[in-house]
Image (tube, rainbow, N blue to C red; front, top):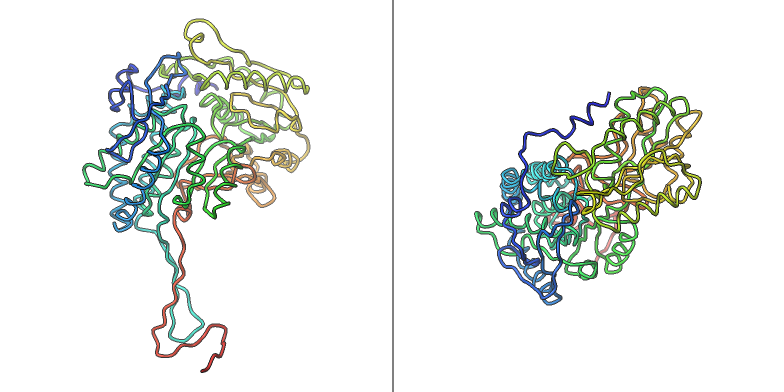
Length: 525
């Protein structure tokens, strides 16, 4: 039943050394963290990037000064004037070339994601594949930025709706997906005619520089101006500059709900637009008719993938009492087979947490849920010895709990999975699932068509993502990604999410010789 654990991460790739990964992506011991393309800037303040795998130093990245930040935004404004003049399909061609450049560097960039962030190599490759997929999506979109024609009530008048680029788009991304989330925004923003200023996570700064280096190949081949893609580096202060900068009509920010409240309020105060992708407290409902193999597979990957550091990570399992013991026992058995270690070693399933703060949070939350009555079934330990002493490795934890526990009500960015029972009909389970403040991803495991459709209806899940017989974690490009409530309401990477990167304009044209007024108003002089 659990062969997926042994086979999930198989690949034919031979291991890269850290030095090989860095050299392949033109990363140095010291890297300038401010760039408008080929022009780079440096300050006297530096961030050191350490791998969470074994604590080894990967390199240093200079932070962005206030003076250099102003230069970056000014250059991005100038580049916008040039980019908006390029027809949409030709902007799509630029993104097509970028997608091909990513294909060429997929192995190295995926390895860098694994090295700097700590997720498995297969997940690193998957993240780069998301970048490639959004480029493919954006290429097609570049010929489909459709408006509307509208029938006018006035004689010899026509109406239409058009979409125009906004200007400079600010992107603030998080450490857990250090390249993919930026690309979701970048690819759509570019084909829509906007330039992008990106503040990547200070916990994974080399990933941002690597992406800029790859884009520079496309920029050079097409003789593009500086400032179409720009990066800035630093802590939350840089984010504050961006959110308060009225030269950026749109801020797309990924992070915690706490961060989102600050960003949303700051951007709204200047009447800007924001795309907020915030926390998730995602649940899988497991019904009596579930397929146990599918259920366990989806739950485990959702809970331990990226060491529980995905916004879509599975946090809660709401299990019908009739199958509770069998599901619980299968999960505990499968958790016992998980191999924890260097994520570049493809025989391992789980890598480290990002840093010591995350380890401390993990331990504190386990202690707090136990204080509320939770029972630890397995895991919850910090590993020691060998590589474990140098990195941030923990054993994924399963806890029997109640949905109303304060600990359960809050997202913990770590591999803690809460199990809870429900009885009666699926309506009770749905009520439990919805009884948290976050509303990102959800799933139900059932072979009952009525339960499946109820779950997806207006009476069902209140999340932006509602899945049937797959887990909560992982989303395909093409479907709009995002959630409700404290998840922020933003949507990225599919459907009509492109509209968030553009401004809507209604046009009325009078092609007659008279001027009839709307609503039949008479105004005679």
